[in-house]
Image 1 (cartoon, rainbow, N blue to C red):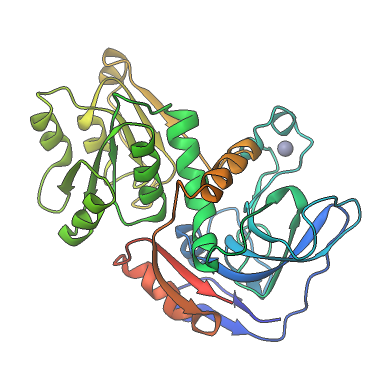
Image 2: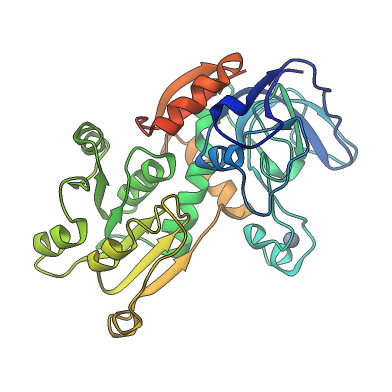
Length: 343
Ligand SMILES: [Zn+2]
């Protein structure tokens, strides 16, 4: 089968398009998905560069997000049926540890991700546990279905489960244009919150306004925390969604009002942050980590997709043979929405 792979870590030049890989066979409890489209995530760029703790076996297939058609099923698979169109939850849990038994699959002690610990989705076929796929209407364009799951699931857990965003909340979302940030904007608006977004690009801020953002801040030309304090009469926001880490943490805390909640799902700018513990207790902040989502959250976001309430923004679509160009687009930081690879 065809796939986008790496044999060594490094830059985009390390990507290898292959057409000679074996088609994987599903074991008991697994299904094989014939992939029609996959989407890139920041995770794929980190994998390309090399992640601590993640070791690859060459040729390693990248990619976590995908949609496709069930092509074969192993024993003991009752649903979905062969021929159904599905989206894939890229977080693979063991189903047996205490967290899994409690329904918290993304806390699984043996949690693994497609493309990071298991062969990924930038390929014609992938094999996953049957419980990691859910059916979507086959009339939905594959590009949109592929772009949906990882970012929306991640944002859903952050906003709905962790921060419990609702009416009356003021939510700050850093870096609008990224998949998680755009999903977070939609979810926060659906839940009745007022939303502040940041970007270094006025054009992206304008597009975010069209998607419902209430307040826009160019983080290249202003101090976000100070600006929010000014515009809210020093009250600040009640929720901050931060996946940038080192570069934004201090401003996130300046922006965060009393009793506020900060949720982080990443540290794209660096891992070390500084928090003044006196401000933490005095303001009674809650600082939370979040990653991916559990099976119930996966079902909830797919239901939103089926109902047409949440829709991913697709920035661009590339052919599998052009995987390099797709990665270059993501690395450029110029995208607004998801970079998709058609297969
Ligand atoms: Zn588990």
